[in-house]
Image 1 (tube, rainbow, N blue to C red):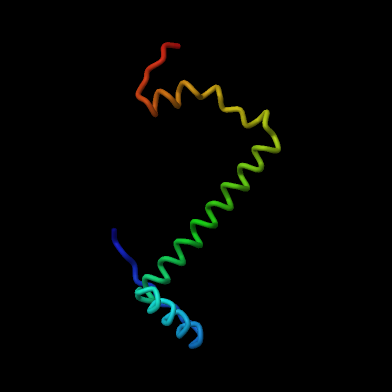
Image 2: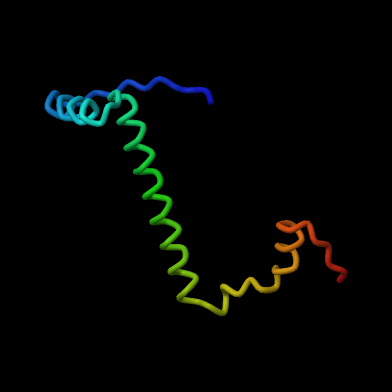
Length: 83
């Protein structure tokens, strides 16, 4: 996977803390930042999915997708249904 370089400015104290944490974990600061950024992205996605599920729960009559069961099975299982 291609990688992109990113330069960031950190306060000295934060950089020192990050360096110490990375050293204790046996990581480079670069890998520590990648790990924490991915965790933030994953947490944001989880929060947005949870919020979307809550909206569906507020209007269950609009959340019924059973009409698509056959189409989903056809795609997922490569099963063909005759209409």
